[in-house]
Amino acid sequence: MPYIIRDKDGNITKASVRMIPNADFLPHTDAKLKAFVESRGVKLADIEGSLEELRRTDLDMSRAVEDVITALLKKNILKMTDLPKAVQDRIALRVKMRALIAEAYDRASDSKAASR
Image (cartoon, rainbow, N blue to C red):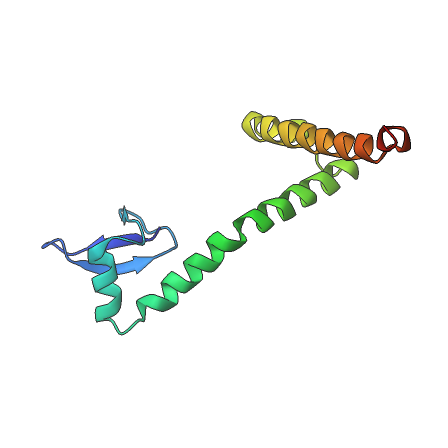
């Protein structure tokens, strides 16, 4: 969602994904923002295509970040207590869910269970 600057008449004069002091924040879908971008010769499809690709890769990226955090924790570069409580809780839940999944596959693959 970009930051925007308006003139005294309320027209958008600047848009940026970087923080601008005293700027408003608009969703990419805002009609006036779309009109501003297109009026400046920028293809709206370029922005929309990039946004869609970011959305499409969000799950892969979240798993990559989780893997990096796990690696940093294992190497004692990062401590769980260094992370905000909300992040600690999310990671703990995900570790628990991954353990439950691994356990389920292990049980299903156990030769005794398979012969039942």
